[in-house]
Image (cartoon, rainbow, N blue to C red; front, side, top):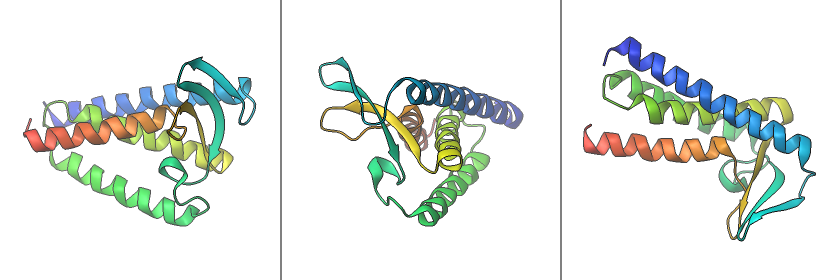
Amino acid sequence: MTRERGWALALATVGVVVAIDQLTKAWVRADVAPHERINVFFGLDITLVKNTGVAFGALSGSGALVLVAVALAIAGLLAYFAAHITRPWLWLPVGMVFGGALGNLADRIRIDGVTDFIDPILWPAFNVADMCIVLGVFGVLYLAESGR
């Protein structure tokens, strides 16, 4: 894979993730009242919550600290991707992480917190961006470990 193709595929993935994330958040903010629970099926609700921290509300109210931590993580991933961009499929999990990060950053800038709404039983609410970040990190780790 060429470097140009790796960047193009990663950027396309970022765009798809941000679009899906922002559309689902807009739908929930428009149709669900804050903290209203809509049961999808046993053990899974749609619940609109505003998260001002990072994962699962940790560091809530620590905006500057969250921003610095996210910026450092993004810089590290960007450097890793630039150094290994020709590795097959690395563009996909990297694009997922960056897309998720940008989707949540857009919320932080616009509404001073992140819109979470997927609310499984016994687990804090999360969103599409969060899922993409987690799956993307696992994907990067898998590809780094496997050497693929």
